[in-house]
Length: 323
Image (tube, rainbow, N blue to C red; front, side, top):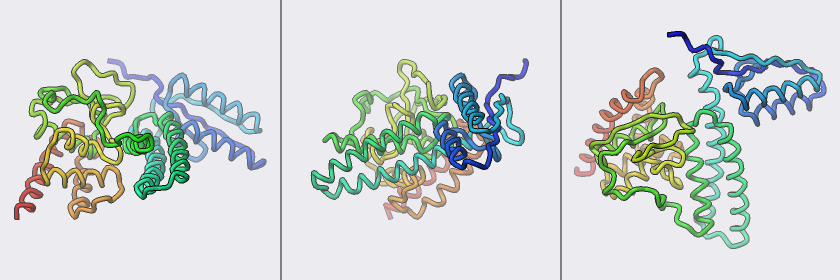
């Protein structure tokens, strides 16, 4: 079998004169708006496709008009970096964007809970509209589905529901009734981390003992009939308001169990990084999950190892509450 030699990355290598300074700032802002990742110095990368080729071509033209020089290269690999390393550059940048949006959304939510007067509600609604636009802008350049995306989307959607007089904690109408969740194919994003690992454990142990799991790209996947998506954009089970997917699944399945509630709170704090609950076990679980989800460990292995961890955590928490 021949190796795949199709270009995976576009690299823009450029140089600009020191003056005028505003030209350098303008090009930097354009690179940020495109979602380009800094590989080294004045070398920037984008995933290779027709749209990004056009984006870099226009930017190279602007650089030339500003008195600089630019060269666009197509690369199968980036020297000294794996594809995962390059993707990590994009994901890290987008996670920073999502964290900023999530923090602003939580601030607005806190003000809404303080029974703000009508005059302030109008301002909070305006800020929420602005946040939605910012979120859509970040999603547009989130090429690989960064982990912070669902939390930010859930928080902004929750704000919109509250401001519109809706219920931010209501499951979508398309979500199946708890009794219809047996022997289903459950679909989630590749590269599972804490919320997806814990949700898969919850599904198989407490919701659907015959569950089958399928791992797909973070965007562009069209579900097959009968599949249920979790912790995915537009999934049947995903972040709602300030709740992570695990918490949403527990509530939807009607699982009244203090140990599961505690695990949900631990997963929440690790996944959303907001330290809302502060359980003593959180730091240890965070470290163990980091090892379970280390690079090179495939998704089935991550679920298997995570299940061992979560079985032990569940038994420990259950015993603690019985004591």
